[in-house]
Length: 242
Image 1: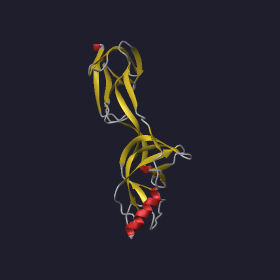
Image 2: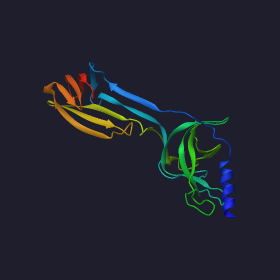
Image 3: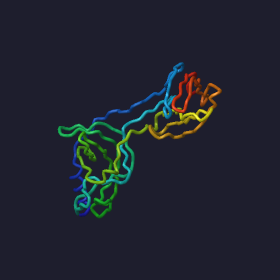
Image 4: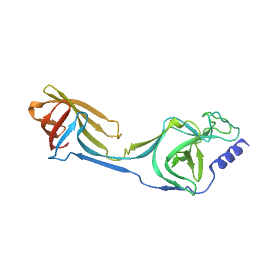
């Protein structure tokens, strides 16, 4: 009997019909190669003086901790369950379009039937895992879309984060050099590489060059020094990264 009740509750919660999510490809690709060879530039301390590479990324949702939809804090019931989405990251899948709702959707994500606090009982057993999508409408409301039904987030908003994330299956590699100033005859720089993030470098290295040499050689790049102080650098790009 309990399995019949449980099945009926899920059917009432999820509903039936076709999904209103229209698939879109929102991939953005950024190509970097600046300044061009032959250009003479002046940059301030802390500025990127040379960058080259390519990154493909897309909007995504990150579920930082298991997050319950369909329940307010402290709410419980014998017959209705929260839908607890398990921690994961999902890329933008498409646009949810109905007469009354327009939203950006990310998925697929997996969820399970639990109580509001994530615990389980005979009616909300936690398994099996079910698949849906997390959507954010244009008013900022967040819901779990299962086929044609919407189950809204009423708590734990801080556990859901919307970001731009690099597509790992694409070729992503960006190199850059930052000017860090001058100390005596030494010109200081920071080299950074980005692969799996658009904001956090995967690798960085500090290095110096003697200003008397007149050139900077690093990772195949070659820059001619025109003028350098602790505040700014004027230089000519002879070659970019190889």
